[in-house]
Image 1: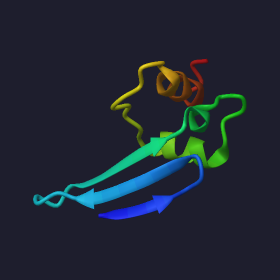
Image 2: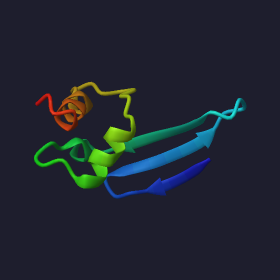
Image 3: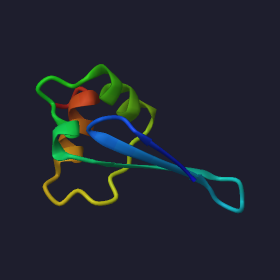
Image 4: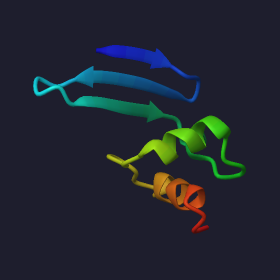
Length: 70
């Protein structure tokens, strides 16, 4: 497993036995800010972002903003 701290988010990356690589981002709500969307955040979301735990729907709003639906 690899761990990298990127400020507002910590990345945990690991490979499953079948070779699939999984990357988890655990972060502060500020990482999902849409006012404005940070370039690095936009890149992460554009590459593929699936919310696993998003009780306040902040990631849903971020994904929609990056997709131009907001």
